[in-house]
Length: 122
Image (cartoon, rainbow, N blue to C red; front, side):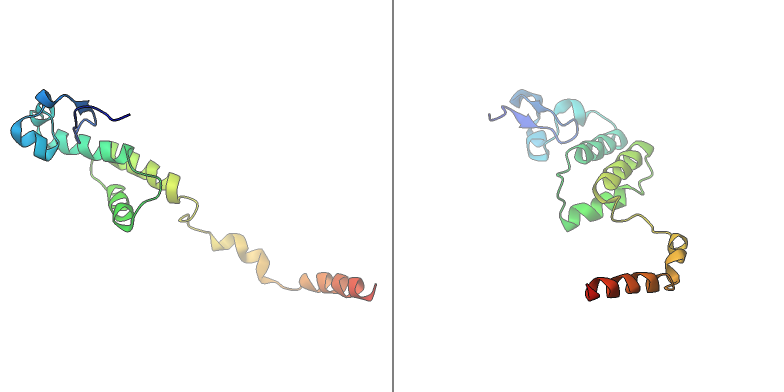
């Protein structure tokens, strides 16, 4: 079903045509959001974009999301980090090499080689 009205990129709502000024149509910002201070408007627009990110991201979207994880605004930073971890947390976790020190000794592999030789004889 097609949504009626215009989309406001700050508040994320579909609003009636009358809720947009002449310049608001082109910039996709409703009259209510136009009255907000620039800092609040920018924060709401960023949060709205973070909430509406698609699951599969382009390179530009990945770069933008990674940059938002370093944002100075705590709400934006927390949401961006949560979104980044959901998408890339399992790939980008730092592996601790100390956990793999036990595998440096290959002496235990001789036991397995003997088992393989027994299987080949049968």
